[in-house]
Length: 65
Image 1 (cartoon, rainbow, N blue to C red):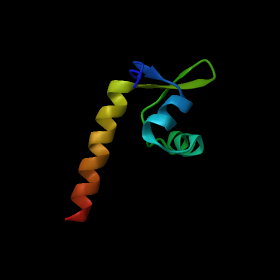
Image 2: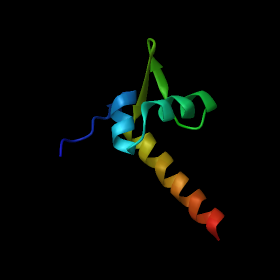
Image 3: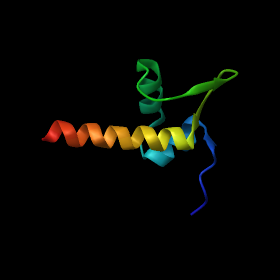
Image 4: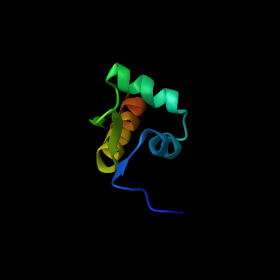
């Protein structure tokens, strides 16, 4: 398996999260996922996304209790 880059594009993140690109764009629009723009294109820092995923996991576990 190839290493993930430090900065991912929308298609790379969608593949990493195993979701559709439209889901990523919806999360961006709602401000629910950490992202930044390079010109007109969205980018995602791998370490920031991994931290965000851990937070999402904790929230999901908390709401199940």
